Image (cartoon, rainbow, N blue to C red; front, side, top):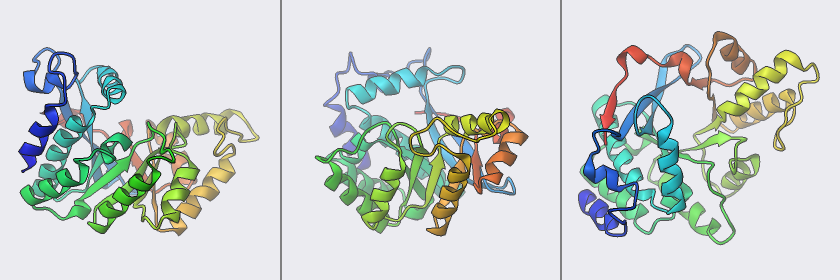
Length: 274
């Protein structure tokens, strides 16, 4: 059933024009990969891993592909391929795997059918999969009801749900509050890496600790907000941690989970063609 759902969806894609056609061609010059990035706790022990889509291992060309797929509303095939890798990895390792979830994929008519199908084909505990709701698309009033309905179904199926890149694009405090007000449990909130880096720089050079962000414009308010999230039993992760000093800064904000360059083991990096 799982493979049928992918094939059925592919008939909507233009084989010659769509970036997804690269999946079928398995382009050797520009292969598409899934890569796993560690998420660590305060002791630097691995807590989970995030599966990321990459076109290759040496530049950001995957960003262009994702932008084109979003514009054409054709991210769903990529989502299904990434999910297949994530579910299989969770089954083999028992690790919690984070999977990026676009709003347009959540609203796809085949979304819930696909989730049911992959659970039937890959027997794992749903709590090993953490869907990260991406910041790239606004939840409009026209789709809000369906978005929250599908999110509730995921949580009732025992999948984990997180907010990705808080304080970036459409990932705001308002989104967090709306999800909680609809009775949807959040497992984790990931604070945007660019925001964390900006906050760190401001803390070094500006004594008034003000930030250029409409959601949170003061480092003390940021720390208070993180404490409020944790009071709701929501785990808080700081992204884009590059140095020991940045790690200590993130800890001072009461973040308890961390991700990015400082914790990557490049000598044992695993890439998987998708």
